[in-house]
Image: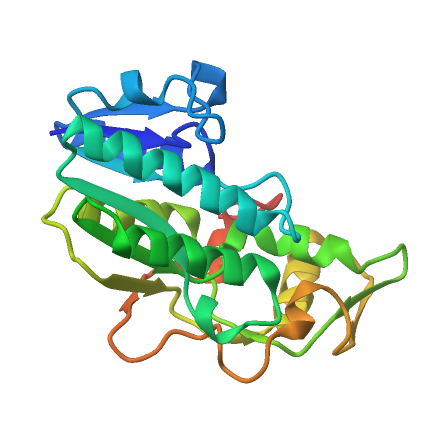
Amino acid sequence: MKIAVIGGTGLIGSRLVEILVARGHEAVPHARSTGVDLLSGKGLPEALTGADVVVNLTKPPAFDETSPAFFRTTMGNLLTAAGAAGAAHAVILSIVGADLVPGLVYYRAKVLQEDMLKAGPVPYSIVRATQFFEFIGTVMSWTSDEHTVRLPATRLQPIAADDVAEAVAGVSAGAPVRGTRDIAGPEVFALGELGRITLAARGDHRAVVTDDRAGMYAAVSGDALVAKDGAAIAKTTYREWLARRTPGGA
């Protein structure tokens, strides 16, 4: 199949293209760097010409109050172009539990994106993933200084980007789900525990302090971001992933 991957040069997109090509598909990465701008629509009709499947992995420049407008515009442009091109399947990557965290504007924006896809003219699939291992360091940096890292006790079930890309590849190459598939990592952690594991692996001796007002995930309560029954569970553990990325690791 010919699969157009919008956002195909990013963390998940680049991995997805590699997987699909290895499996014999014509997977083409598109991004602003290749002349395709989903926000303005520039280059989009040409990118989707002849595409059987379109995968949308784009994200806004910020996770703030501008994100709903971003998704409203980009999904509108994508659905119009995909419908005109006769694409048979549209896929997006969303977030497990996005609808359970109304206090986060970015999560509300992702739900808006999902709803637009569901109501659109193209048969669809939604893959919802938990937070990526690759972003844990960024999350820690939001509320840290030279002595401490402050993190809420939010429970997460993070997953490796490689495992997310595998899941999106499987869905993209199959028939439209006309629904949602959830994928998560194999372990549940309090965010503070993830912080301590990460610092220890890096030889960083800063203290992790539990602060339920610290950072974006302070708005999350209970197990909203933990996978529910029926989710696909990936095999890669956080400690395995860390060991491959830290000095002296396996």
